[in-house]
Length: 280
Image (tube, rainbow, N blue to C red; front, side, top):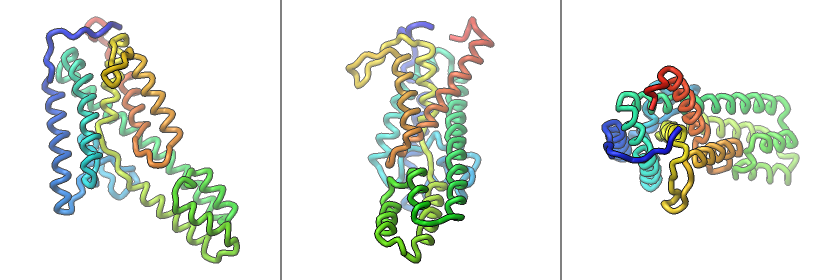
């Protein structure tokens, strides 16, 4: 372990530069194609494997998609911060490792992040489907209240609206059917949700920087000095907490970030073990 001290190196190395160019072009392209009713994230964003929109190549292509073709501000901010992180930390790693090794590392972290995200989705959807099946067998007001509480659906207005009506009208004749339809619609929408962005790969890059240069000072908001190892640890804990909490309106794939970090750690340990003298 050592502290990174900038020396003579390429400020915008080849792979980092080309990754930024590709990501910017893809962000621009989605706004062009949406005018022809082509939603690019439907084809290249990552979908759950049981979604009708899932395609195997999305494990790679989701890393080059950002934001949404319906929201320019979201796209610009998502793209900017990811590319800033890629440039700040990826440039250092590419200068140290060389272009081929850095690209390999970046892609492995991206694949690992996607795999982790899909694994978490698989667990969540399997648990949800089992609970939903049990609810259908005993559907009633009390079991509905228990179901939406345990599954975290109480935070959504549609489920709360039905809850309020059903509580006020316990003899409601169609509330059971309506609750089943509502849950089915929620499942259909969620199974088709898309995940985009290079964040998983970039969190892997950030972890690698913190792993190799743990005592390097990074300036949060350009003002607060924090050692790289502490910043990486804080981000990991934040993502773990946020992923478990799963707050309403939080559309960040926190476990993808963690997956990128975990895969980065594994790759670094393997590389270091195989080639201790020239690892850095």
